[in-house]
Image (cartoon, rainbow, N blue to C red; front, side, top):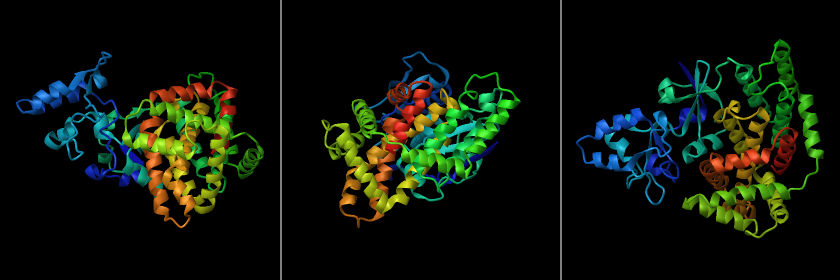
Length: 417
């Protein structure tokens, strides 16, 4: 087995009790039959035997195998096995081997592409978000020791290559990563180009297609080359600049996403930030057009002060998204791009409403470290409490619609960025 990872994940080490958050809260954690059995063996005859029996229960959905049991939670949403030092009491006493796969691997995300195992990271971890967003070379991919992958057997297989959709997936993904990395083109224009490329491919390259011959393979390669051409990207950038769209709908979408998550999340950090962001845009009753005007003014001001730094945050977020979320899991390539742009829009809204960023714009001499800290908090809390939530994913599917309307709605999101 060969393993690779972006450089920030090769650098990652859990900072445990020094972390400003904990991965042991707010999530439903399943445990497999094999790990559950091993844990019961380890705690047999110890004071923890009764705790394990009481605090891990069979999955109420009747699932078996990898989802056989669920770890219990305290009233505050934290894992029942989290101790006073913000450490896992099970791992401390019995070792990493007894942990559920999710606990052991997080924040690593393992994906098997053919014979390769790739390790990306979840920005729901503050330390991962810091390493990913702030280091210029964070997304450079490199080989890593197999031990870094921890449990490669749980890696999801996304490119078996036995059908056209997965056989060409790695080629398409690499083209996406190259396009996103074209720094000479404005970031929003790169996302627009990515959407146009997905639209052009969507007529013949999609999940389940069987009528994909050699001519289609050549057509796919030609379209990918076309979207790497400097003239194409310059033309698309000019098109996007000339396109006039109101910003109110974009602001309304971002606000609606966050309001829906506030009702479902109990994390004090998340709720505190969301309250501050909403207040910074004028409160719950502010019309989306007015909120957009505030956002657009802040966006322009922050661009003039720290444009390159902010560009790095969103570029790294996008590149990591492509590595973290294989597009083969989406209904289409265009839907995968839509979800990327929606996630970027939500976190852009949070960042520009973050009280530290608002204060920075009022005092431009504020050190860039304050902006970095705000970015880490905004991206991390959005990743943890919004981006993977089933309700958010359902909302994204409904918002995207189907066919040509998906691209039209993508344009609204891209213009908002």
